[in-house]
Image (cartoon, rainbow, N blue to C red; front, side, top):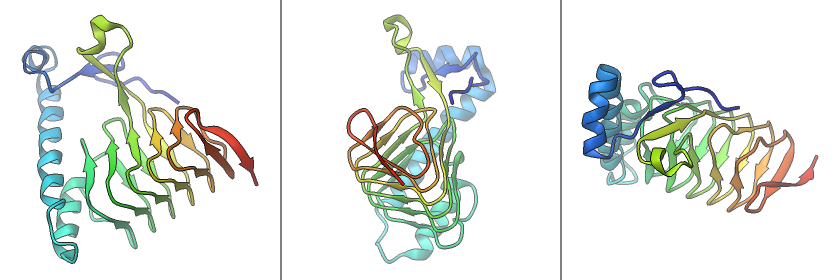
Length: 198
């Protein structure tokens, strides 16, 4: 389900264009600056995380606490490299496993339920751009992603804004998921087609 973003009627300024950033600061003030600063901070923290020695558990835990704004829940495993544009809106339940090279663009919020497994290079995207060329570089739209308990996301899958994935579902490797996934089902292919239910 897609939700309106509170900043500007479901859209907020793109922060990577200096001209638009300057214009956005005049329009949105402190809220815009806070978003911009958080993206830069998350990028700095994940850059540090991704060069730590693999066995530096203490260093990784400390950086994840800064990225997420809280300690990792019990028995959560995340293998770097790990990428996020915000971090504070990524909610992980116990026993979540995230393999190498995953990306979480979590500005609109991502929740992974207990026991979720995520294969390498999976991507979760909660923001997008308008189709209209005149607005495309000026605005983003956003909607949260919700992944229920015991879901398996295959390697290289892409989960798009507003998607909910039901309990015990499987998303096959390389699948693009633009629509909700029913519980206890397997979706596969570029359109995320339901191939099996149990």
